[in-house]
Every structure is written in C-alpha cells, then in structure tokens.
Image (cartoon, rainbow, N blue to C red; front, side, top):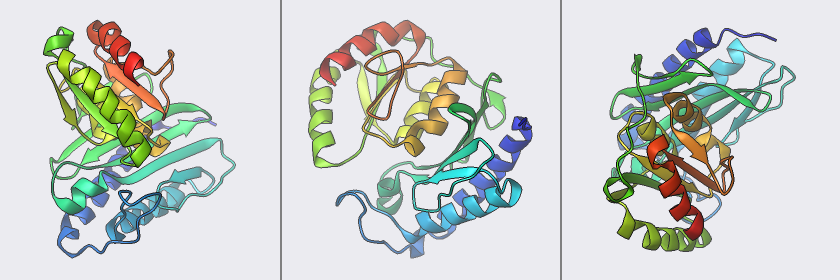
Length: 258
C-alpha cells in the first residue's frame, strides 16, 4: 500500500509540536510515576499524556497501523505500516531541568524506516526526514559535518542508566575521552539529529530501545551520517554514527571498547 510520506510528515510535525507544547505547559505541575525497568528509568504523567495525544491522532488518521510506543499505548495492526513513538526522550532531563529532551516519531513500512520527526520543544527545533528525500531542520536542508580529525571531534554519548550499561559506558568513556576533542552526554534521539545538523561530529549510543533511535537514525542517515554497530548495521545494543571522514577512526575506537 502506497502512502503520501510528505503529507504524513506534515501531520506528524504538527503532532510533535503539540506534544512539545503540552510538555512545556505542564512542566511545573508534572507528577512522577513509579520507576519502570530500574530506579533511573523514570516516567511522569506528562510522558503518558504526550503519548496518548500522539497515538490517538495517528489512529484517527491510520486506524489499521501498528504502533510501538514506550509508555504502553501500542497496538497491532494489519496494514504493514508501524509507528515507533517515544513521546519524551530524555525524561530525566525534562523533570530535573538539566538538559534537552525531544518528541520522537518514526514510521516504518515493514522493516524499512520511511519517515521520521524529532522535535525539541525547548529549542523550538524540528528535525525531519522522508526516506530518500534528505534531512531538514525547521524545513531547511541540513547535512553532516565535514569530519575533523578524531582528536578535534565532538562526540555525543547516550546510554541507558542501568547498572550494567553504566559500567559498560564507563569503560567506553575511559577509552574514548583521551583521543577525541570532547564528549557530550545527550539523549539518543538528539545525539543522532545533532550529528545530522553537523553540531556533533560523531556519536555512540549503548543499550537503547528502538523508540530511542528509530526517528533519529533515519534523519541522520538522510543527512549523510555513516551509521553502524559492531558490524555494518547499527542496533539498539550499539549504535555508532559519524561524519564519513571520521567514521573509520571513531568506529575502530568504539568497537574496541564497547
């Protein structure tokens, strides 16, 4: 079944902006829920309300689609299309007011990502891509950095803050920090779209979920970022991204440590 992906992107951009506006408006009155997988895996009532807003609108437009969503509003469908939704990637930053967060929505046809939107509510920035159509920031084309030498590069690091992954990330940072220009810890979706915009020269994400990286990965790829993992394909266990000129040097270091 064919679908107008540009029209879908326009609708999803509006949805992501609406969810982001809700998050800004309710930040002072949010209520925390019980932690999910571990003590640092936090969730608020705003996460849940944002996901409900997004999922309800998607199902109103495409009632037969599958939805995979972080906060439990997923469902099966028979259309062959799947939405992957993270309504608030970076909840710890959001609730503690210590950094950025984003709204992430991706559309798959079978196993192929076809359209993606990542919206930064605080920065009023919307990153988007359609498969084969390039990557955009607030409607303007964007592209990857030229790729400085490894020793001058700025690299994003993202990871799930459970005990096992924190230990793994500590080893990676010990190996990586002395050989790169500097690192930034940042939620996975923004890590990827900042690479797409040329703000980061490369990035690493460890032990994510699909909803953390699905949207950002398509946007990064469309901007010219090289993506991979322990092999040529990236995964939720290990995602490496870099400007093409930096890829070999960064990937070698990350694979040896991660």
